[in-house]
Amino acid sequence: MINTFGLACLLLSFSALAADPAPVATPTPIKSGQESAQFCRHCHGEAGISLHPDIPNLAGQNAAYLLDQMNKFAAGKRKNEFMEGLIKALKPEERANIALYFSQQKVMPQPARNSAQTETGGKLYAKLCVYCHGDNAYGSDSIPRLAGQQTVYLQLSLKRYRSGSGERIDPRMQSYTRNLKDNDIDNLAAYLASLR
Image 1 (cartoon, rainbow, N blue to C red):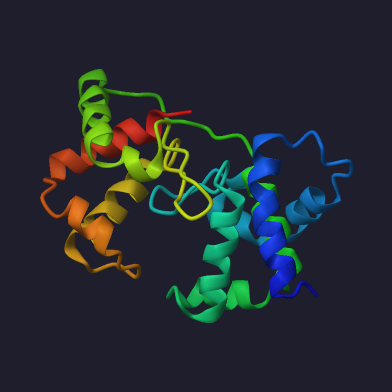
Image 2 (cartoon, rainbow, N blue to C red):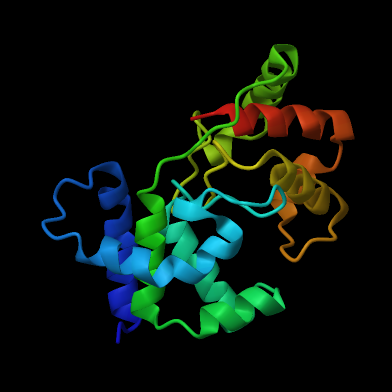
């Protein structure tokens, strides 16, 4: 079983693996993660591309971020009865392998349907979001990747942050979304969903 120190070591190595998976001599952790992720496919889709517009894609997400979110579900810090039950059934090693597996899957951006909307969303992103989520919306170990995410999921999440009604309350996100109109949120979501 992975102890706290072992999980910390995994978190530190995830960034390097995501940047350059070539040094991984054996596909065992990723293959194990693929096998353990079988139950995730019913909602999050094959290889982490969601089957439902209101459920997030996991493909290409930062491994350390995914592992942290799974651990929060297991500890009851994130509330979702279904997810809590599933994650609690996983061993720490399985969670780490699943996070690594999804982080290595290809992101499938949604084609921009309205170039003016996407352009407006890009300007708003550069003004409000780039500092934390990065130039390409790839996030970090502690901040989620938004590039290529589901449009509807992004819209719902931003509205929950704006109203403070979601399961995750984040003062920074609430302050940045407080003055967004629904149209702004739609523009942001369209822009982010179109990114590779």
